[in-house]
Image (cartoon, rainbow, N blue to C red; front, side, top):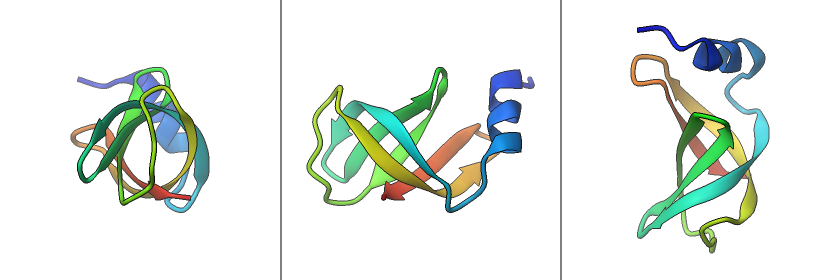
Length: 74
């Protein structure tokens, strides 16, 4: 099934773009970040973040099949 919000996100952004997002969950290897309503992904690394924090992330990779984005800390 196609998600128009996801397609719009893909059309507007490229790998390497820096975005601001909200941390929705912290895990030992990184954090899950939402950069737009319904658009999120995993940022991997040792950045110190808390749930609810707004952080800058860089798009490292898109996964169009799973409709997921992989980030690095910017």
